[in-house]
Length: 245
Image 1: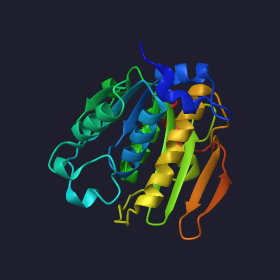
Image 2 (image 1 turned 30 degrees about the vertical axis):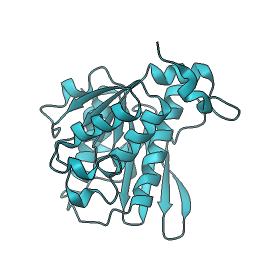
Image 3 (image 1 turned 45 degrees about the vertical axis):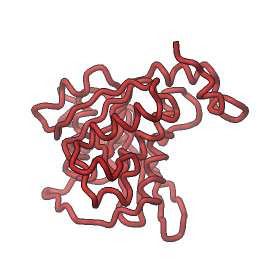
């Protein structure tokens, strides 16, 4: 039986309740990507006591990752990121069950990956992958916690199909996505990752107000946040096509 002593500071005054902590310990969350955002999200979910974390990533740890991917160690260069991430979680919090898939998801292989999970956290660095994930969660009615970080800037929102707008309602998908190389700064990446984990905390426990139909934008150059409201777009192609499945 899991001892709650470890999580005592979670449910003291102004935190969550002990019943909320039990919900966390019984929850299951997928983290799509074990890079910069994924590292910070995994770290925070493990600290909160999210009972089962599934980590999806097809890459290996490289030296250039270590400026912001804080759960990966120098000794793990060349190892699969999912294995490195699992080792970190098990050393940090043995209570947590970790499931792995060393795979790059696509339209053909995703179905078995998401089965049994209702909350998916988007930690991809590719917008092609983000839009694909957006379509998947609409089709299968999953909750998506979107995050992105580029240079000094980042953003977070929570998407619930049939209740909120989707990623394409917020940012129309271009006909051709040109992936650009941006700086990845640890303070910005980890700020966004912490906010994504906080969204998971709110969704799982019911504490607080999730970012539904709200895009929280962070400007690291001024350390300012801006809240942008959005709504479901009746003409959104992603919503129209994927709601037919």
